[in-house]
Length: 127
Image 1 (cartoon, rainbow, N blue to C red):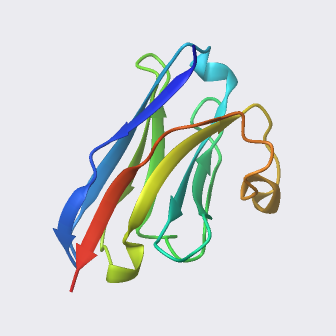
Image 2: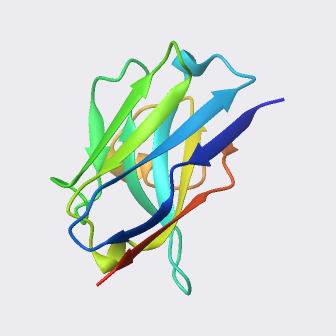
Image 3: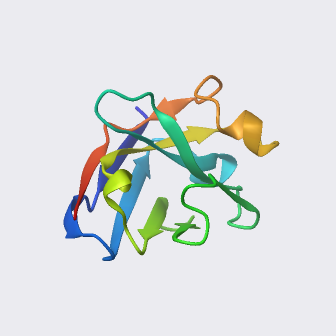
C-alpha cells in the first residue's frame, strides 16, 4: 500500500520559515518524481515545486521561486519543502505527490498524471 504522509505544517508569522516533510512508503521512492502542490480555501490546487528522481533538476512556480526549496532524501524516502520569507498568500494545505515522468514545468504542474497524493498539511501564515 502506497502512502504519502505530510507533516510539519503549522502557523507562522509573515517573513518566517517553515519546513514541511513528506514520508513515503510502499513504493520504490527513487523511481518517482516528487512534487508539492497547495490549495487555499476557495482556490484551485496549484503547483508549487517538483524535483527529479535523484534530487537534481527542480522546478518552482513563479510565486515561490527564490523563497522555497524542494529537496529529497531517497534513503529516507522523504521529500521536503523549505519555505522561507513566508507570505500570507502562502497559506494553504500543502500536498506532496508522486509521478513517474519528468518533463517541462507545464507538464509537472498538472495534477493529471500524478500517481499518488498525500492528505496534506496545513500551513497558515499570519500578517
